[in-house]
Image (cartoon, rainbow, N blue to C red; front, side):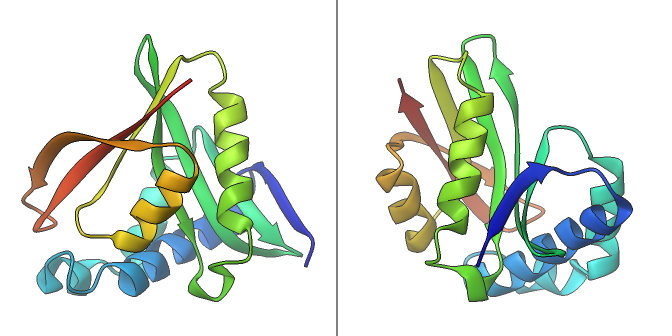
Length: 157
């Protein structure tokens, strides 16, 4: 398995990112977010979002197939933010998420802090982020449309 991490550029990569987004929510969040939200989150909606939000996105490719993605940006002048990191379930535990995380951290190297929000109760994600050096801040916020709380984690460099 030779994974390539690159900036998302082509329509095929955008569609691949949308599939990973859609599949990721349906694999990782049952029981953590509202069933009604998951039912409404279709592949078509994920494709619409993917074509609208193209900036600061990396894809992980195994050959021609997109198997993961990460989105990043600035939370404030001192804090970079990881907005999203998803990997197809069959690639969990293979190192793809670590490659994406390292690529994001490299791109956010100028920031002394990196923050992220994750779905509260997502123990697998929390363990991963903690292995990467992130720590819970105690901040929580309800996203009512998703029917779940988010918790904030920060990596101080």
